[in-house]
Image (cartoon, rainbow, N blue to C red; front, side, top):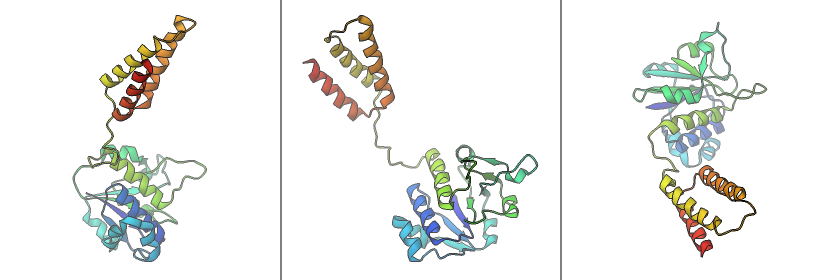
Amino acid sequence: MITFVLVEPENSGNIGAVARAMKNFAFDKLVLINPKAEHLNDEALNRATHAKDILKKALVKDFSYLETFDYLIATSALLGSDYNIPRNAINPEELAQIIPKKGNIAVLIGRESSGLRNEEIKKCDFIVTIPSSKKYGTLNASHAACILMYELFKKSKKKKSNDQLNPAKKHDKDVLLKKIYEVLDTIEFSTKEKKETQKIVWKRLIGKSFLSRRELFAMFGFFKKVKK
């Protein structure tokens, strides 16, 4: 079970935005450690939109509550060197690959103004950072949380909004290409090579399009009519 922990959050809007992102990616455990901003005021609730329930059941705790977790994962935009081991970090995609499927896990998001402190990071099992521009590498707390949630959600077995999409199978694509080639064979080209080029182009277009079966059958119907 993954819990998102906001450490001394300073902005009500950000708290609401984190709750909304949690709802988007099927997380529902939110803990606020010594919050400096309200999480149930109008600003937070408005930013949460349809995730008000997450805000309403969020736990407000002090730092001692972190002792209840099996794993603590820190987040930071400030990276360490070879001589600052606590700040040696992995990226969110790597986190999604290695995070345990079981256990009570907390992902810590630091203060908007200053992030997590060294002493807080040292208490964590490891640290995650989001690769970004060297010119301005620090993300808004809610944006960082959203990216982490997205990567974790991708690797989960939870139902996703695009699960209903039914991609075309190889056999379906072969049938469509056969129909397209039959149409091309009825068209006069100045050279044989130009006809072959057309066939190669159509094959690549179909391959790169990642058509759904519904889209593919619509195209199949079109080229069937063209041949007539």
